[in-house]
Length: 149
Image 1 (cartoon, rainbow, N blue to C red):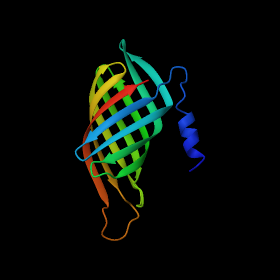
Image 2: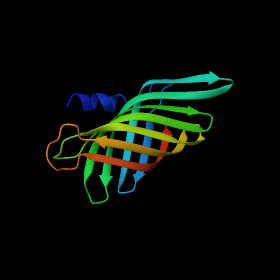
Image 3: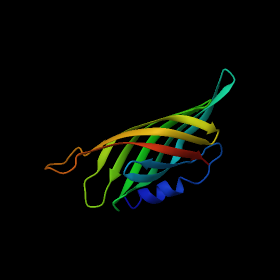
Image 4: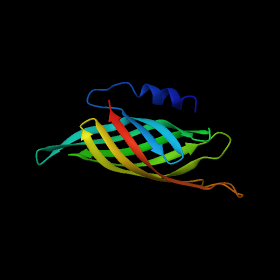
């Protein structure tokens, strides 16, 4: 873990023709922030309209309204075509003192600028290896503002 965090932080350094995505998410009972650095980032021109595709990995944090926090590891794929923004990702969320939650996420929204998008997000996280009566699932929807640097 100690070797992975510096590598992720250093991978956020700007590379030619690549861009970091930063997202701020408001969910009914929590606020989250994430940044993803590109693994692959390219632009495709189809019928004269450019489409931007971002495949990335990143880190995030979720702050629950009751005061708890959780670290999030993100792997995502985002597409920006014309004024449509779509994204699919996998999340691993690790609250302190608990086992990790794992699950998919889907984003669909409106790109009102080539570098800015407003979208709705749905995610479903489950704790796969847990016994007992504790919380095993976290599903939520949210409003997301994403920017590309």
